[in-house]
Length: 277
Ligand SMILES: C[S@@+](CC[C@H](N)C(=O)[O-])C[C@H]1O[C@@H](n2cnc3c(N)ncnc32)[C@H](O)[C@@H]1O
Picture (cartoon, rainbow, N blue to C red):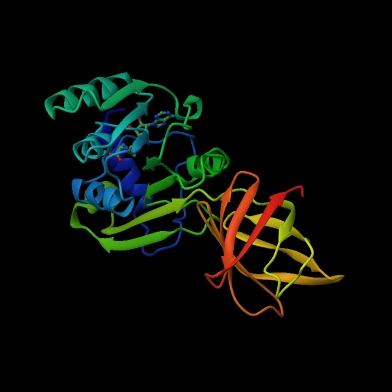
C-alpha cells in the first residue's frame, strides 16, 4: 500500500478528532502508516523539546528523516529508525542533501527492538496503541529524558508541556486542522523506604519516608517522632522532586541522584535522604 493510500486511510479514521482528548481510533491492525509531520509542527516539536547542541534525538518511525535532520541542523545528533527500507534510504539521502549526514543516521529497525538508552530526546508520531506499548520503556529511560509526541498522548503520564493549535496542512493528513504536541519528562524513580535527615526544626533524629510513585506523583508518609504525616502536593520533574508534609509548613524540594536525594525546605534549610536507609 503506498503512502498516499495510507495517508487517506489514516485521515478517514481520524476524521472525528475535534479536541484535546485521545481520539477514538479505528486503526487496529497493529501498524502505523507513513504520514509526515508538517515542517511547522517539526519546528514546534523541537522548540518545545528544547532540542539543541548536546542532545541525542531518536525518532521512532522516522519516515523521510525530517525530525532528526532538523534537530541536526540545530547542532544535535540523532538517529531515526523505520521498518520501511525505502524510507530509511530516503532519510539518509535527505540527511546528505542537508549536509548533516555525520550527525543524523537512519537505520532499518523495529521500534520495539531499538535501544533507546542513548536518547536525551525521543520524538514520535505514532498511534495510541504503540504509545501504550512503548510507555514502560520510555519510563525506564534516564531521568530528565524528553519525550515529544505529535498528536497522541502517553495516557496516564502528565505532560510537562502541551500545545494545541490548528494547521490547515493537517486536513490532508488527519482530516482535521487540530494538532497536539505533548512533551513528557522521564521522572526519577523514588518508590521505596528512605532514611532522611530533616532540618532540626522538624526532627533532630533521622526519619523514615515511605514513598509510592505514580509516574510523576508520589504518595506516602513520613514517620516523625512516632507520628505518620502524609505526603501532599508532590511532583517529580526529571530529577527534581517536590512535596509537602501534612502539618509541616513549607515545601520540600530536592534533586534525586540514584539512591540519594538532596534538597532544601523552602529553599534554605537542607534535608537529604538515602534509599533503604
Ligand atoms: C506517522 S509516520 C511518522 C514519520 C516521521 N516520524 C514524521 O513524523 O514525519 C510513522 C512511521 O513509523 C514507521 N513504523 C511503523 N511501525 C514501525 C515499527 N514497528 N518499527 C519502526 N518503524 C515503524 C512507518 O514506516 C512510518 O514511517
